[in-house]
Length: 227
Image: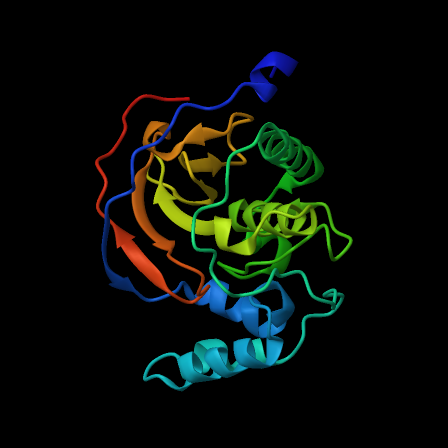
């Protein structure tokens, strides 16, 4: 990526068409149970939400382990105030440059490796850099980018996690940067930050609004072109 490309303002993106409410991914809720400070301004309130989800039929066993802190997980707040802004965050050259830096830095810092290889389980969301590790999968890139952008001053309400399917049929996670010009995709599979409608994915579900546990289905067509 050239310096000029990194600094250039991105094209605007159309609104993403959203559908019905969806259940938050179990891996995300488990992560919030372990590291509530990374899922809301009030960790106690996050724990209550995790417990409510755990109490739902069919979910109790899956979330039983989420109530204990993960070894090595960092404490301290990483979340901006939970009140949603009246208007989307403004795309400024400084914010765009910061997003480019964080996207590139996290992509370089984490070596892709499956949760099965790391933890012996199919799905575990984590912040490997915060825990002193260098391996992770797509959700881990997303969580580390979100953490770094919030630390740099980007409002938490401008950052949303989305789950997609790749052209080769693999489940994948990306981070959406929601701004006044549209929503842009931070992705570990490419160094480029692109408008959501230019990403080559089938969109599944995403966070919506300022509630991290509010997820909705996405009703968007598939873009077949590759990066």
